[in-house]
Structures are given as C-alpha cells and as structure tokens.
Length: 115
Length: 110
Image (tube, rainbow over all chains, first blue to last red; front, side, top):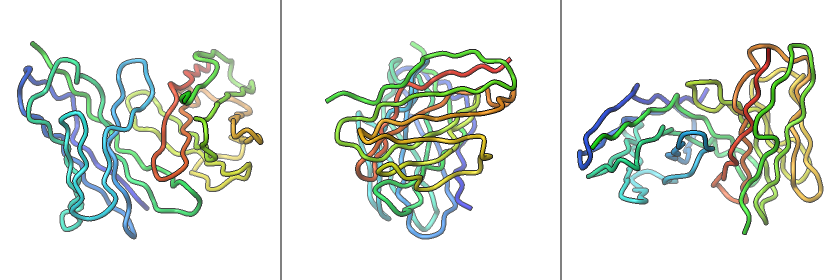
C-alpha cells in the first residue's frame, strides 16, 4: 500500500539557518503530495502541495519539489524563524474516487528553532 | 467563510463506553474525512463521507462508524471504547483535492 517516510526529529536549528526535511514516498499511480504543519495544540494546516512530477509547491518561504524519479518531496526553507517551530507532516493523496482522496501521512518531524 | 469546527475539544471516557464526536465542515465543502492521530504519530485515515454516503474506509474495525448530514456536517461514533482509542481525532472537509482540518477532539479512554 501507499506509504510516506520522513526523517526523524527533532530537528533543532538556530534562527536564520537553512532547513531541509526529507520525505520519500511509495505509491501506485500518480499521487498528489502535500506538506502540512501542526502548531502545538492545534489541528493540521496545509502548507503547500504539488500535483504532478516536477511541480514545485511554495508558501511562506517554504518550498518542495515533486521528484518522481527519486520518489521524494523534501521540504526546504532558506531562513527559519522561531515562529516556524512546529511539527511538519508529509502526505500523499491516493487519487481515489469522489471529490477528495484519503491522505496517507508520514510520522511527522518536529522542528525547534532557537534564537 | 467559517472554517472546520469540531466538538467537544476534550473528552474523557471509560473503557467499554461509547462516544460521539462532531464536525462542521467548511462552507461549500461536501466531503468530510476523519483521521485518528495517536500521540507522536501521523494521522491515520478512518473513513470519508461524500454527500451523505461512506466513500472509502481505512483499516479500522466496524465499531468506528459515521454519519454525514444534509448540511454536510458529520459525526464519528466509536463503540466499546478501548484504551488504544485514546488519540486526537481530526475532521477534514474538502471540495477539491485539498483537505482543511479542524482543531481536533482529544479523546482519553481510561
């Protein structure tokens, strides 16, 4: 079945450092790929998405490129801020029937940014 | 435009009891999905409802059941609660390929 593997955390960075969180996936067909962020005590917020190979999703300084050849969707940000401290989830959708598909999530990577 | 809301925020139940969680979908969204997020884990898909019909189910036993109403709000019911059911239950509504999550209901089973 479909699966998503993320690098284990926690990731601890100083403010303004470069961030990479690795994500690889296994899926049949052509899934859409997502990054969600979860702040303490809150639900999930969609951060960015990509729906086909070589697409780049971007939002709030975060970027991720859909790499079909390496089945990867790594999250990057050039300069992190303390406010970016959260848990980041990589996810894929199975392209099922209906108007929305089920999401398969990785286990999440906790990011802590310090001053 | 109001977002996805869930109630209650927190709930404590005893093993063997039954629980009902509620979700109001975002305006204009006709699809609702439910996920279970155990502590330190990613969310796991429970099931999805589209126009009041179940439209896909994850690897959860039949004691997890749901409903969707004509206004597209939804309920998740869990019978015969077990200790392992303790988790954050997330509801997500969608109208295209993006799912928007509510804040979740934290269920503790003792």
